[in-house]
Image (cartoon, rainbow, N blue to C red; front, side, top):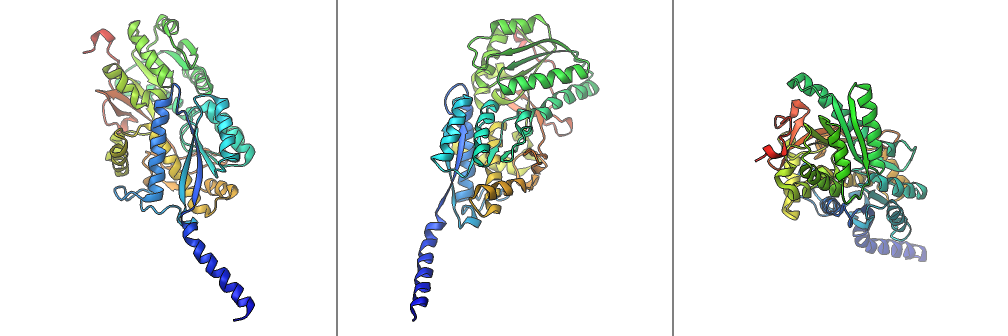
Length: 420
């Protein structure tokens, strides 16, 4: 054997010896969520959902055969590389979120970031990712402005508040046509970070355009410890409907204050978030009943999509809770990123970004009641949609669109002293 051929043989042998190691390499994905602070309960559920999604990609899920990656084995195009989630806690603080994004990129060397639930934190953390040219996949934040910044590296799978707020007004219009319910007086009650302030602007605009009377519009501090004066302002206006955007802590506090002050509008139309957290019903019990919330997911939609039931059973078996709209979106977001990694066949950020931009996932492969996932030039998924659910006997029931409703809407809410 010539020296040249010997060198080739040795190089080939060394490469073959390296294959097992390559097959076990990890793909680091940064994850930024509120793991402590007022939204820690929500953050814990999102973490569980992401861990389940990563485990399915890495190890499979025979009980959910129709789900992408249910066969496991990691990212096949990268020789079975496994996803490793590197978690960071933003504590509900935008600056902490930005700092953690910087750390994940520069120290942990993550190839992409998923997060951050709170829209104001998503805004700062994604700026860091954009500056460093790292893909940022946002599964849950709904502030419409997040996809209006001209970013190249930001992708959002959930619909945003422009759609959700329009859904509220579409519902009220159809409610009048279907049940003769004539709502004229609205009040707005929203927390004062990016999410709540943008929602207030959208609701104010649509209320004016559609001829509703705004009896009051209250923005309260997101980390309030009391809401007595704010609720008194709402009550004084005598609204028929309150549109409310609150995270878990303030959602619970507001409901307790409503009861203490005997305030019961005909309905509260909640903007998801704290109102769909597992702890909301668990903490309030029957006092949580009758609230209507915008949503993107509901367990009763399993009659239309068996993946919902199968995936939820797997989630429940591991964590003893059901998916919520929040956690179902997080779960879906990581699977979308895994799909991009598979098609990119690379951990280079530009390759992942290009693969995300080319995403085209059919609705039949999702646990969400969406037409699919396909991003426009702004990074917004154009195939998402919303529903409304009502809490009835402690369970979230789809009540709108009326064509797919699992339960007839209960309107108005009973007064506190009339509830059993």
